[in-house]
Length: 93
Image (cartoon, rainbow, N blue to C red; front, side, top):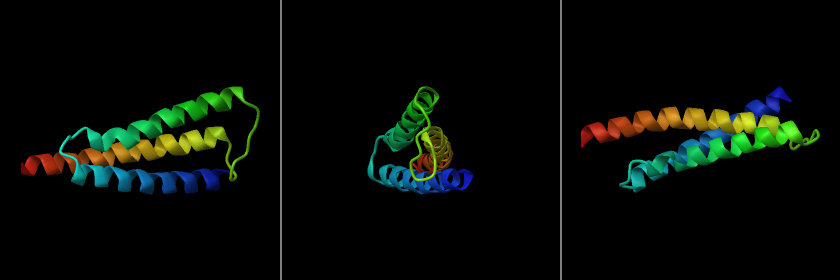
C-alpha cells in the first residue's frame, strides 16, 4: 500500500509540474500557474475527508486516504518548485 501511494505521489507530482510550468510560460498572469496545485490541495483534502467517513475502499492499491496524501504531496512539491521558477522569471523582468 505504501508503494502505491509513493508511486501515485510521484506521478501526480510530475503531472502538476508539467501543468504549472506550462501555465507559467504561457500566461502573463503570475497567479495562474498555481491553479493546478490549488486544485490538487482541494482534491487531497476532499479525499482525506471522504476516507474518514467512508468504509475501506481500495483503488489501484491505495485507499481514499492514500490518494489524498499523494495529492497533497504533489501539490506541496508543485507549489515549491513553481514558486522558485516564478521568482526567477519575475526577477529577469
